[in-house]
Amino acid sequence: MKRGRFSEEQIIGILKEAEAGIGLAELTRKYGVSEGTVYRWKARFGGLEVNEARRLKRLEEENRRLKHIVADLTLDNQVLKAVIAKTSRAQGEAGSDRVRDRALWAEREKGMRGHRADEDEFRIPGAREGR
Image 1 (cartoon, rainbow, N blue to C red):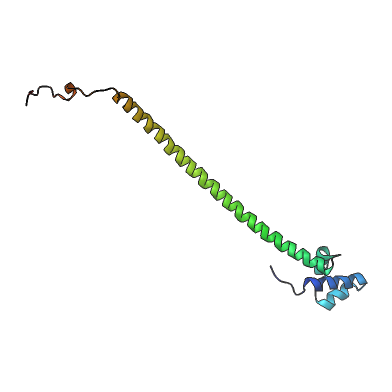
Image 2: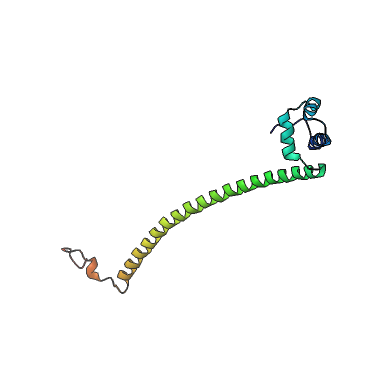
């Protein structure tokens, strides 16, 4: 933002001159500003003292800084939510694979329990015995 030629203290002094009765045309000529500028200053600083203007400036700066912090934190929050959603989907897919694999292993183990390998299972039909 463009920095003006006048500080807040100077602007308040100019406005006090206007309140004291100096005409608007004379003020604009004396300080080299337009009438619109004087009206804008009056809207912003009208009725303020110098210490109040300084406090207003500090509060505006703090507000700007806090808005930046909120914007950064909001962005961080959205990124983290996206990462969590992505990882939870991946874990959900991997989790279903794990459940399926456990079920298969459980079936295999259930089939193998109490099962004794008999010699008949390993005999090759037509092969000669005794060798």
